[in-house]
Amino acid sequence: MDFIGRHILSVDQFDRVGIERLFEVADRMAPYAHRGRITRVLEGAILGNMFFEPSTRTRVSFGCAFNLLGGEVRETTELKSSSLSKGESLYDTARVLSGYSDIIVMRHPEAGSVAEFATASRVPVINGGDGPNEHPSQALLDLYTIKKELAGRGRGIDGLRIAVVGDLKFGRAVHSLLKLLALFEDVSINLAAPPGLDAPPDILATLTQAGHTVSLHDQLNTGIHHVDIVYVTRTQEERFPTQEDADRYRGLFRLNQSVYTENCEPNTVIMHPLPRDSRAQANELDADLDQNPNLAIFRQTDNGVLIRMALFALILDVADEVDDHARPVTWYTAKRIPSVRRR
Ligand code: NCD
Image (tube, rainbow, N blue to C red; front, top):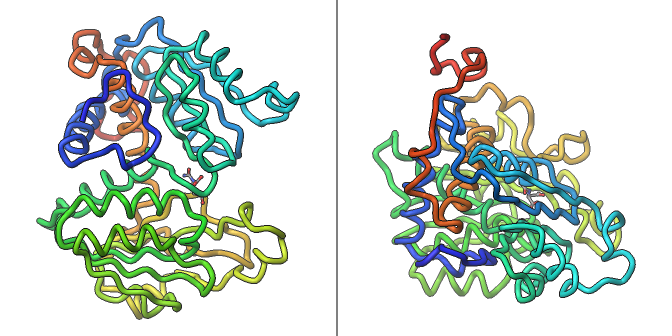
């Protein structure tokens, strides 16, 4: 797969060679993300970071990733502060904003909106989440995390046993992740969702066509037996027609330490794209798991910077020049990253 100058709209664009290339570049971004070195390889480049839906880690990590490569970030958040709220079309907005930027990341509440925006953009566009449809960069960082978590156990993504639990109907991060898993061999997938929040049929078909073993569960406890990874998701309340509809699902699936101990194998890795809904009525991933060494949620968020740096470097064709522009970091970093030696 070719990255240079391409939009990243869906994980459907990826093949295994492309994923390996992305992961190899992501590995090489670690010294920069961990503040061992700085690079200015994207000096002068501008990222248009357009987030028309709530976001913390995706927006900030895309911005940080671009800054860490030496580029500048211009950000627009909220529909109401953009001219889309004055009736401007996605087409016009894309023509305008792509005149100001070298690359754009966009999140928008409607499925297909980012692809529509990209047709009018004169620069590459990365989908930062289009409604309930897809969230490719999240799935890529999740897959990268799965690979790293399992590497220490001598396991790879081929042969993976994973449980994906929660809102599988509206969760765009799991839609993208499940589609990516179809590229691998012999994956066994437990899908555990409350009735009514099941994964879309086309995604199930993709997994079975790939030859994977898929088993469906309507209870959390039975869905998380005999797996390497439990991937928990939040009920996507903002996608339900009414708050009442969403409330019916609140707190149905809750993973905590005792549910984990009772049902999971001892070293099962726990993942979640975040944010977790920590309100008492929801609490799908309890804070009593925070000391569990298998909780990988903050390793996922750290990996997000590496994957997003790698996407920018590959799309803007500087992946092999990053180190040519490097120099050591001179500010205090020892406390943040213990492996970076105090000067
Ligand atoms: C996810 C999203 O926005 O789809 N969050 C994220 O980007 N890390 C998951 C969610 O909001 O539940």
